[in-house]
Image (cartoon, rainbow, N blue to C red; front, side):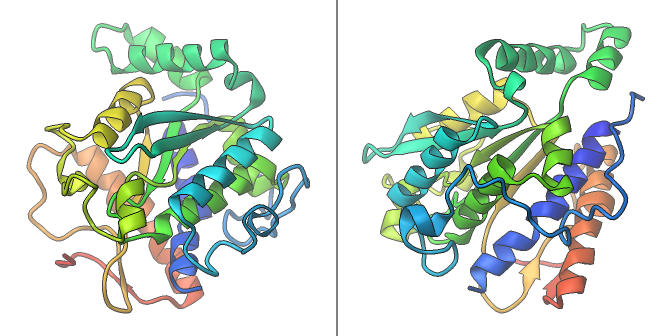
Amino acid sequence: MRARKLASFLMAASLAVPAAVAAPAAAQPPAPPAGCDPTQTAPVYRGKVPSPKQVLGFELGERQATAAESDRYLETVAAKSERVVSGTLAKTAQGRPLKYAIAGRPELLSKAGLAKVRWEAGLLRDPRTPDALAEWITARGVPILWVSGNVHGDEPSGTDAALRVLRDLGDRSDCAATTILDNALVIVLPTQNPDGREAETRQNAYGFDMNRDWFARTQPETDGKLEMLNEYPPALYIDAHEMGGTSYFFPPNADPIYHETPEQAVGWINDLYGAAMAAEFKRQGIDFFNRDVYD
């Protein structure tokens, strides 16, 4: 339940960003303060992290950030904010780094803190873990949330949106940001395909569609990402894509749904995440559809 609530809060806080960029049994966590809305709360920045314009010379969404510019801003946020650390998952065929950032409470981001998060996540995935221990971890640990973009190199806006989310988590002091930071660990992977981003191709430099490589793991970018996903398994994974036309698609998906997908997961996707996105898109007057073929 805790993961559901926090994941929903992050989803609501971040779901409006890709659209804007593309267009130019456990203890419950503390409830957000009265009047705290994840999308309508006015951002309050501490001023520790410079804006994209100060670092890159333009605001996110004014033009497409290159892979190198994305890396530079990610590293700037990590250097300036005690809430963010950074690392490299892998290197691409053309030698570009696959950069990630982790945002959370400073004590969680220490070597010992991250090791504890990984250990607890491993116990929760292990069917041998006693129920009482799993419930204790669920009540006192933190859910892991992922925000990633640009697995298809010619669908660039997810990168810029992820960078905005990272800046907000690294520097905002208002309740919308602190509710997430106080109760979760957020991993931000702005571009999953730096080579494709630079070439403006769907595939990576080897010509692979890496959104079809999750199981085979033939590509270095996929392999590095999955290694980290195994260490930090998410309660929510946002994978931002683009599509043609003037509308947007998000779940509920069209039938049939793969029969081995757990009903609980389908319920969360449709009734929690999908509903949160629908509410915000309606509020902003952005056209969308679901329960239909989109590809």
